[in-house]
Length: 253
Figure 1 (cartoon, rainbow, N blue to C red):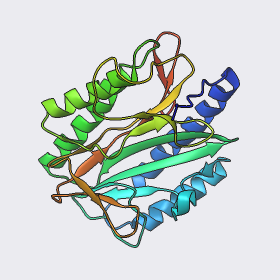
Figure 2: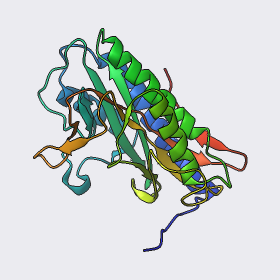
Figure 3: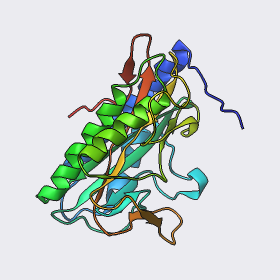
């Protein structure tokens, strides 16, 4: 089946900048609340209220039956953790992944946060997963290929002895949260679709402190590491510009 990769117009890019900034502002808003004792369900409530006040739509809520605004993945949960009455504890790490719609266009970003004082292993994992994201982002420019991004992420992760999850990947984004092309976190330079000005993609390394193997819980959503070791996940929505790239979900902290 051939890929359908959309090139965004200036109008569409402007709307995606707005959606992306809403994502950035929501992450910034939530950060002070990520403390010992708060439940992931309360974080979800705070996020939905904030998003709707800005005029955005929490796009994950109801997406293929997902029941919440945020994906809240704690410790050995890799992605798609469902908010619940679970209270965060000192030493946890939590990935908050969200997609916000604005006037029909989407913005998407995930960040892993430390709850209080975390172990050196978790600090190492977080630091190098975030750096792996930016290694991938640096490869974004017209003429390069998706494989150049994938290889940069994989090379960095393997150099730092982190497990690269292969079952999950980044993606294109626009009016839908998941569009072509897929953006894996492993691959070979020069392979895959060629990047063109006006493409918008989500780059999102999901790296594990131990094995790369994962499994899905019976809830049909939550993915966990096979060995119970922690996982981290960082993601940006990235526009391919004439000369390189623009991050549409910039960190505001």
